[in-house]
Length: 79
Image 1 (tube, rainbow, N blue to C red):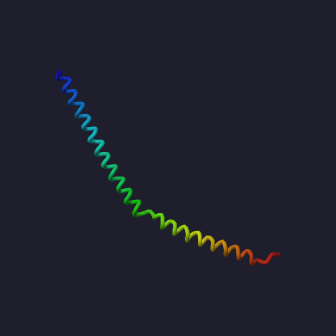
Image 2: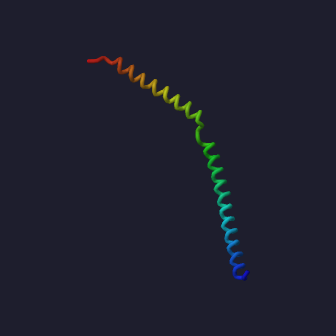
Image 3: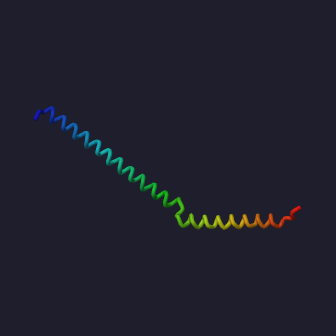
């Protein structure tokens, strides 16, 4: 094998190692960012059960309010 071919293969191998190294580093950085995002979501967003309880309470309050409006309108004297 010619020396120029050997040096070309060594240069190509070094380039591939550098690219793979950067990709692995980028992968670990993204993995860390995803982990941090999951932690943020777990700390700051409501659970499904909490949201369901809040929605039910809101529905009850709206129903009570509409019933009061309906009763008020029914108690009015019609001219």
